[in-house]
Amino acid sequence: MSKLHFVTKHANEATVQRDWWVVDGTNQTVGRMSARIAAILRGKNKVYYTPHVDCGDFVIITNAEKVIFSGNKLEDKMYINFSGYPGGKKEETAKNLLKRRPEAILERAVKGMLPKNRLGRKMYKKLFVYVGAAHPHSAQQPKELKFN
Image (cartoon, rainbow, N blue to C red):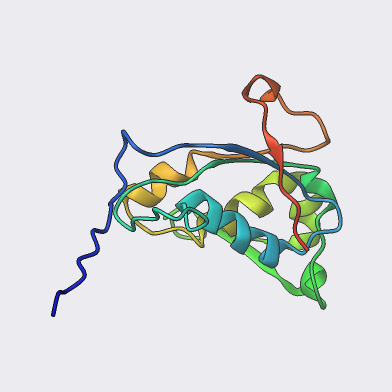
């Protein structure tokens, strides 16, 4: 009786093929969109996904100001920053942050879904978020990514 041997190929920096994707944030729910984008940044959409290798793609998000929150999160969700000094805690609602810096909402949501180590920080650098429909990455010929 012969045994079948399967060889698993691990990805490395030399074998990884990186694509560029552009996502339109218009009428997209923040959490659902961020989860899908985090998976693409990690490379989980690739057949050769390897957890200890950065095999993800580049993602460009446009129209960050047009994202939506489900439920009452626009009024109730608080974004907290702490400087490390006494009295240095600052709170801001999602509504105010969306008005002031809409790209920060998506950046924070995606960053929170990536690994908390040096590999996660490397993956996060492949995310580009822009207010409005224009972006400076047309030379990379990004493909449009649609969510159902």
